[in-house]
Image (cartoon, rainbow, N blue to C red; front, side, top):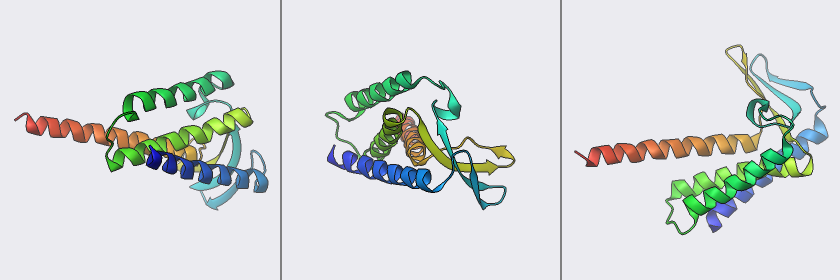
Length: 156
């Protein structure tokens, strides 16, 4: 659990430091174009979850985060001998969840700033904590598929 905590801590620190930098240097709801028609820094607040679902349901989203952390720990981490990739995965997942939870607890919303337009689709603005969560979910899915592949191969 120490390695998971260290990875989570690093994710949280980087996430929160960048959010502080964004709030101190950018103007709310304004963009700085970094790569024309592709990537902007846009400081926005989101009182919902991904794609602003559950917008304005701060208490619900705080409870979902706390319950998720408890369930993940109890069922997937506690008393388990984790592989290196699982340690990294859960470290990223906890770091991302805690990074956004801190925002919700302090401000009542999440600070977002990474703004991409890909093939004329203006992707929802997100942050480093969101990246940590998405990468960890991708790693979990990859691990599940690798496990199923190994089970299928050994069943022959």
